[in-house]
Image (cartoon, rainbow, N blue to C red; front, side):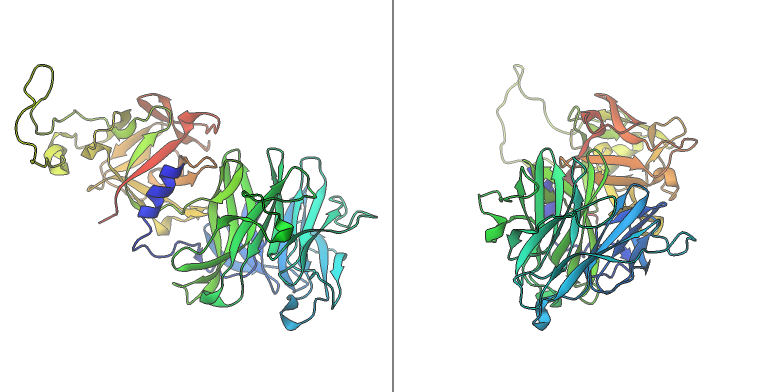
Length: 482
């Protein structure tokens, strides 16, 4: 996994910011929630964003109540939306309330769209060491629901909510679980409860110092301890994501689990320097390293070896091997001679004349740094996307020959990229740092198949299985796109 981080860091130089497209402008976004095939997130001040594909976002989500920093969660066949009634302690007072309300749908055009009357579940007083805003919620493995709230102007406080009613559990006493942070929320994984929050300062554009941190506990009530033994109640927290180049101040963590091994984290960047310094929605892969959540990398265009995790073999064209220049060594042959000669790598023009002109089959083979094993991966903006990423074309470097799915649910390389759906690819970084590769569509098939290794040398399309290395790939960086 560290290898992937190193590869990704090589790509950051000279690359523009990587964020959602359309109009993803929002501050303090809620967790992303899916409703009837669309994605929704709500923000401070009311309203929020909608996306049909998870990549291109626009306004239109409706949330009454105004206030600050909401959260949202689907429970059964209903949606619970939670928000704070004020904007925090920056004005000098801490008086606020956390409210919950239900809706059957998040689609404002639906005849079933109607929010229930809001119900107060937590409040703070003017002079209290707690500020009841920035709520976040979790339903744990036992079905109990936990809400945390608070800002830098006091403690992070936790209460238990009844997931059937959205009301505070009767008799439940609030407890303090964190400090020196805001925008808190919880999540659960493998026996651990995680408390996430945002350190630093907000609301100052490119001068904001927001960054997301985490601690964990075996109990939902804490104490939440970071990776070096510091308690979150004493200001501790392990880093999850910080400012990256021209994207400044990540805050307000949300988790979205698509399926086993495929998780995304949402948040806002306080300022996108390529969008006038406005606050924008961010979505990244969510990785897990040694039991800790870590932000994955936004996939960058470039030329790569695509390597099967199953075998270490490289995805390549099924063409005849062409020997590169160079004398044989060893096996009784002399190993004497010059040592200062630098051999050139085999070039595309050295081999392309031996390739068939039509469709070429694709296989896995030993990586030899040869032209038929180098793939250039480039986003196709006009093709739309999926949650957190655009679709890509995957071409043999230096050519228009494109990786494509065919009607047999196999992969091949067609002579020219046309933009057809079967030539567009979704690339998801998985929770272990490897990658899933999926075609946008397969001619004659409706199954959401992924690229897998049927055997050491046989790539094909089949159901994705996170437990199997057959379904996983690594991208080894070769060079940026020229």
